[in-house]
Structures are given as structure tokens and as C-alpha cells.
Image 1 (cartoon, rainbow, N blue to C red):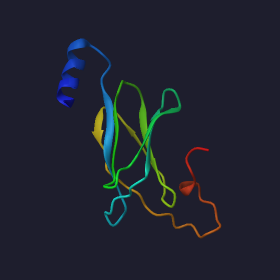
Image 2: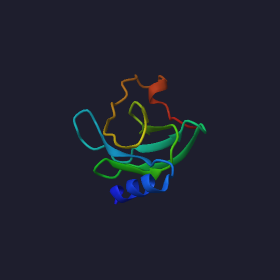
Image 3: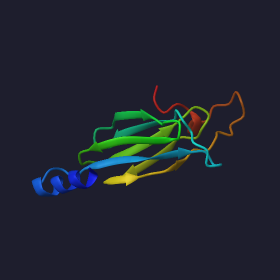
Image 4: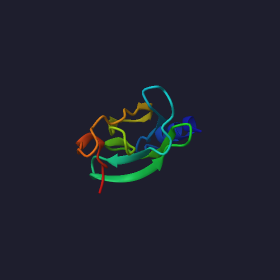
Length: 114
């Protein structure tokens, strides 16, 4: 299906397709279900899509048009992960647990959006 979409894009002269998917795991390679993946438009400076990782850690933010994009992956208790990308990519992520002592604030471990 992806091959057909890419071929149609090339034939019709439409904007190139962009999408990102992957798996979110902990350092010991266990899935991190429930982590949130945010698709961010750098050009618009806004979140356009978000999804939750499945029980196996998989996430998929689908196909979108051209532009400057990033994915932010976050779950309470873990350090946030931010990645710029172009095109259709597979991006597997290792989320590292926060090591901040209880009662102290850490910018890396704070919620990404109010």
C-alpha cells in the first residue's frame, strides 16, 4: 500500500508523503505501552497528531504531506525523546527512566505540553 501511495505521489506531482512509525522500548528492550507520540509541524509550531503506543510498544503517526516535522515521545517517569525527520521513516526509540530524586523537578522528565 505504501508503494502505491509513493508511486501516485510521484506521478501526480503532489507533495511528497511523510510519516513515522516505530516501537518504543525501555533500555532493557521491554515495550513501553501507553507512551505518547506527538507529531509536530516545525513550520506551524504546533502538534498535529498524537497517538499512544500499543501494548507491544508500537506507534504509527500515518502519512502526511511535506514540510518540516518532528516526533516527540513522552511518558511520565521517562526522559522525553525528540527527533526531526523527513520522508517515511521507521524510528524505534529507547525511553530512559528519569533518575531525578523525588521532589525535584527535571526539565527532561516534565510533561512536554501543559
